[in-house]
Image (cartoon, rainbow over all chains, first blue to last red):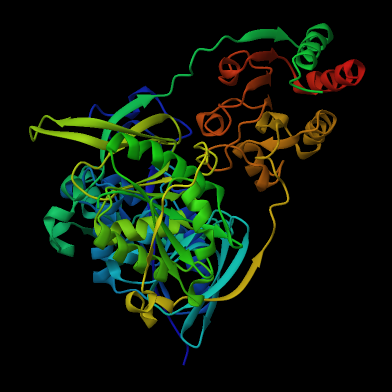
Length: 291
Length: 339
């Protein structure tokens, strides 16, 4: 009997923080996502690759993407489908708005409960916050073990999953039972590119909301095939205590946001001429900074 | 009750620097709050470390010493920490932003439904007025950190949930022992009553730890290169300069990502934080992610051909020019003028 696994990849659409403009923040201190280019969070890509490798090793396994965000986050589900995922779910609801990592983890954990996967894989952290908190918090909410900083999911042996972890000072190989939450480190292999067959199959995949927005774009083919529907789940679909979602479920509050301004410090500009460099080095030697 | 608890991380039977830095910081915070600093020490054969912790000002150490705790494992450490926090109700809990602290703290915060802020660069005590709810808060922990790829600095607070939890990276806070150890009590945690078999569901089957070979943190002179260095070969120039000056070579994340330099050399928000006597930044633009890890250097020299590069504003001496010309000139000048 071949083993198969149901694998959920937690992914996030993130603002590309390398290209931040002036309107990036709203007055309440939360991110104005609309003003920024949005990308598939890089380490979540590494996580997707680990999931796809498991699927390669255990044919018949299923890889589902789960993301929480506004309607446009369906873009990253499509991206995942193009690269080999079997399906995806968009968690979207006004009631999720303003969530910190804890409220986000609560929503994700409720959705995971509904999906009932064997393995949950996420990137270690997202580039917009760099907190690395959501993975462990989802694990705790589900009362599953967590294995962070995975570099390679080696395989499954006698019902236990074996994972190689990358730590600051070396590596560690662990085994654990499933279900388990695994977070993947950037040193794990990069995600495979889009697959032409998957691209053809899923290029018209979309959510119901996107379908409604597109009603007047008659060039799109009719929306009849079930697998092209990206489900949208809200609070009503995943249940749970409403007080735990969004702003009210977030213990942390943003008190203040400051844009980065370098502190003005007396800075001496010099040229790269031999003379100037020589003068500087002499100064440094005489002040015992070097030498 | 309602004190500050610092999670003490150990490595090869020694206390990690970051934990001593946190104890030092916690002392300052505790003074403002008129409370005490306590430590949580989990491991095997770790009780001997109590004197060192007392020297950094802890008035009480909660110790979980058990041979099953010899290596860090998420679940037993979480169970012990959660159970202790439920009992002791600390107002603040601090962890190192290490691979251990960043694995443990979120799990603990989730179980306690308390707020957690990762990678704080500064911690302060302050007040807060919630205009909407018409509530006043005194003595909150301001958790200050760069966010959004380092483009903003955010001050985070947890008005209603305790403990207020934060992680802080190694090297960000100062480390200062007291002249005389604090009067310190021990609280021995009954490990077997807290832990169950399910806490050991994750087993370590292999571990290869290596000594940190590259010690950029301990170096008083650092020559760091960024993406502007252009190639791994060009980095040799920086190694040569570092060698003649008796320093080490560091790198920005962009240079490490491009494969120009080893990850162990990475300086900045996701690398190490350094405060050398002299920091030479070559081909580094000066993104906040990088400068967060070096801005406290005593002297900064920037070399960048772009006169508008932000690094020049941070520098004591800004050299506008091509590093491939400047660095050899520096080496030549140093050789000529030293001794």
